[in-house]
Length: 186
Image (cartoon, rainbow, N blue to C red; front, side, top):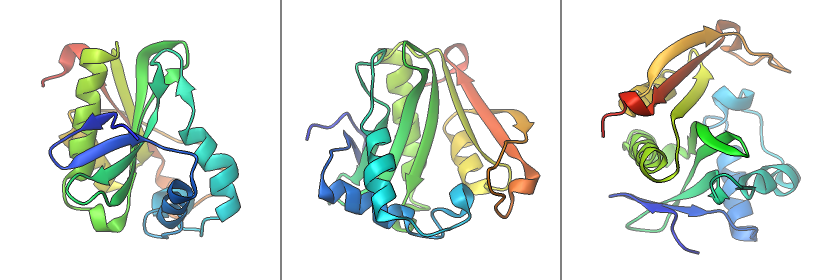
């Protein structure tokens, strides 16, 4: 499958409706450390990956003419590292996108999240008509907050989300970061 974007260390490619991608996603979402700030670290369900997660990642956004989620592979080895999200909040307008990432533990601390995020932001502002990038995480997720800051986003606000089921740290709320095209420094 063709690459959507390549960086020095990463290849971002569209997900495919294959057993291989479903297996990658299952292993990623089954890791309690990876899912700590998403669902409290609960185990993944293989059927949920196939019926809910993968279809969401395969969605094409008409305003982009492409997807909003990409599988991340290490460029040198082809190893699956996780995924990146750069998804329009409105299917008919590319103006505001949400940035996100989920990488396996072996990829943590290597700068991949920042490298992929910066590349997506650059592509969004230069090729896709994006005007504003937003990202959010739990207030206690300092690792993700650092990636947002290193990627050029600035703290916008603290808010309390509606968690269907509280997980450790959710009592501290969430934070939103943003970067607008006028403030972007390549």
